[in-house]
Length: 143
Image (cartoon, rainbow, N blue to C red; front, side, top):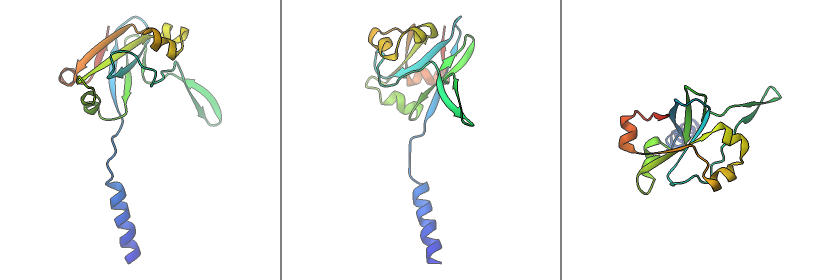
């Protein structure tokens, strides 16, 4: 009986640990070409998050490549991962603004991520406060 009580207590303690969960911010691509999206607090692209054209995965021992969720074809939706809550992502920025950078697929194919960051080769940057994002239902539109 004591063993069951101890195991139950350990389960309750472990399940009550608080971890920030990853969330996504959708973006709608209304342009005429595929784009990649990323967001930062910083006012320029930084090398910390390495965007890739394809993600390599293995399915039943077979290597294959898939497009990442932060890519959107024309007239479709992509998703930018934030590794904390959406609200926390904005609140952690010094000026309480989140910057969304969009990079054309042609640029992603031609340059490395380091070159894209060094030369700031994004097609568009959009800056929003939490209040603005809430009004937009946390969906960013790229046109």
